[in-house]
Each structure stands twice: as C-alpha cells, then as structure tokens.
Image (cartoon, rainbow, N blue to C red; front, side, top):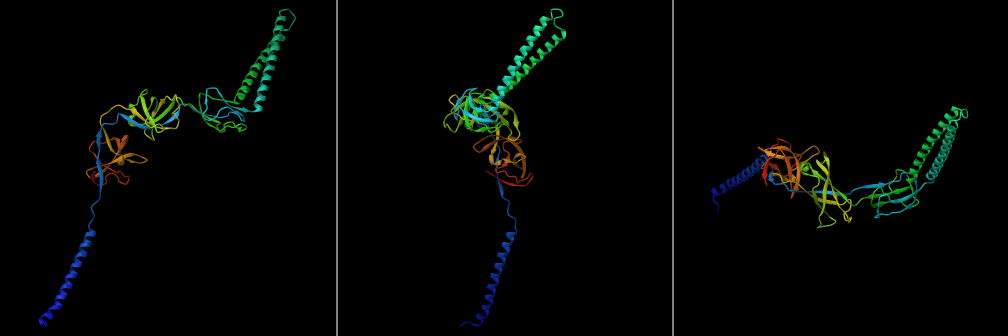
Length: 369
C-alpha cells in the first residue's frame, strides 16, 4: 500500500518533469534562433600567385594557306558562251583562251570600223597626191593660184587627221571584240567553273571561272603585339597541316603588314611557301612555329584568371584584402597558362577565376591554390 506521503509527492514530481521538458525545448529554440541570426562567414575566392618563367623561343600560331594570286574571270561584255575550253582542275598558262563568247553586234561594229579606216586612208592618200601635184605646178608662174595650193594643203591635213580618228575607232572596236575571248591573266589552276555553252552572260555578272596560282602559296599569320619587334623578314618558318600528319613544311617570312590591328592587337605577316607538287591547297589551316629571341623571364597566370571585356583585358589582383583591376596584354599560351604584360610582379596574388562582377576596391577573402 502506498502511504499518504507518497501519494502527495507524485503530483509534485509530475509537475517538476513537465517544467524541465518545457525549459529544455525553450532553450533549444532560443539557441537555433541565435544561430540563424548570426552572420555566415564570407566565402573565400580561389587565388594563385603570378609566376615568372622564361618564354618560349618558338611561337606557335595558327594560320591559313592562300593562293599567291587568285582572280575571278568575269565577262566584260554581254554575250552568249560559244565554247568552253577548260574545266575544274585544269592547269592553264598565261594568255591561254579559257572560253569564247559570241556577240554579232561587236563583230559587225569591228567590220564597220575597219571599213571606215580604209576609206579614210584612201581619201587621205588622194588629198596628199593632189596637194603634191598642185605644189609642183605652182612653180610655173600663173599656172595655179596660191589660194588653190593652200586649200589643197588644208584638205590633206584634214584627211590625215580623219585617218587618225578612224584608226582609234577601229582599235576601240577591236578591243571590244577581243573581250569575246576570255584569257588567263597568269598561270594557275581553274578551281571553279560556272560557264556552259549557250549561256547568256552579262558585263559585270557572275564570274565564269576562278583561277588560283598554287605554286608558290602564301601563309598568313597574326603575330601578337608583344612579339612584333622580334619578327624579321627572311627567317625560315616551319609549319604543319592536318592533311599531312607527321610532316613538317618550311616557308620564308617575306612580308609584314607594318601596322598592328586594333581589334586583335596583332600584326599580319605573310610567308612564301614553295609548293612544286601542289600538295598544299589554299584554304588549309596551318600551325606555324615562328622563331623568337630568348628574353628575360616573363609573367604567367592561368587563362581563367584573365577577364576580357569589350573595353579592356585585365586581372583581379588582391592586395590588403581588397581587389585591384590591373590591365594586361596577352602573349604566348602554354599548358593552360598565358603570358601577361602589365603592372605586375612575380608573387602577386590574383583571383584564379576572374569575373566582371567584382569591382575595384571590393573586400574579399582568398584561398591560395
């Protein structure tokens, strides 16, 4: 049997347990609220140090092969195609007739001009003969009046000038008729043909042929501004193309543009490429290795650290816990690293992944990688 004292103590114990549970829950809720109210620590940006290393002595740059000369063969007169003498892939020599056109009105104009020239020459010959006879007769006193001699001399001079005009007119008509024969301006290969016998072509219309010179070729390469001072004409340059894996071709640097393009900050250079077997084709992409002089150590950063915008190219340097935007120029690339030129020193801390969202003077925390 429970005693009276035990019965009286039970309610007190129950009330005590409930009070303790309620107190613990309140304390836990208060702790959670306090934790939510406390600010979270800012995230740290991955950062790296600017490294110094010797630059490459050979600069590998992409380029494109182009024909040394190329032109579109376009008709200069409106006519019908009478005969096509060449096709795609044919090798032609300078002056070779590629196609013949037919325009009866030009042929008729040439015949008319020739007739007028012959008539003018005959008239001038008769006038000169009359003048010579009158001049000889004038030596006999009273045989011919001086006025008649002067008139004969004037007529002979006028008819001579008419011959000059007729000959010029004939040469013009002959030149127009010569346009009916389309010829090659230089030796090369026909790479495109649209002409067909019977087709009507017009002056300044679509080209009938595309002619390209395949030996030698040109290789055009854009050299970054940082290396412009080290490029010299006459240097041999080796390059490769995908069409011939494992083979290396050689050309000579012959021409430089003499101007740096503002859009790409590079100078266009050209190499002459001997192509006696015509293995290389215009339009092929090439990877050229341009020799450059060895210089002092250069600064390198990961390519991801560079921020490129329409206005500038820069890195985000962190000094004293704040960001600084440092303008740079880019150089050679190698294994994910890019050469940079600017107000930097080896050991400077820059963000590994640059972003336009970070402004100058912004406080940041970094984690070195």
